[in-house]
Length: 120
Image 1: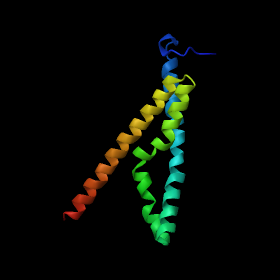
Image 2: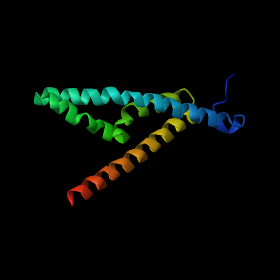
Image 3: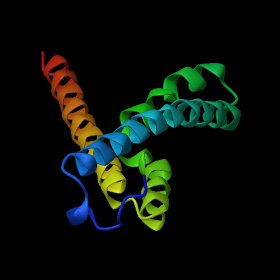
């Protein structure tokens, strides 16, 4: 079934389904964060010549997933817009925003807990 390019003329519920498909696509693309973390840890271990540096720096990209997700989500959203799937691109953007906000909340919680332990 070929859908019109304008979401206003879609049947009721189809735009919502397309947004959910975009969110599922973004969630699947978040699996790319694992190789990004591994590559960062590997290059840090090569740079400093210490295997412990790999394990010490592995968490840095994982803690900054809110920004590193842009590496793979922006091209995915641009491709979906180019294909005329604006609702799916909106789903990708919503998933990116949710991930970013969760990331900020957890980093702030980590900083709060770390500071409260240092203050004792």
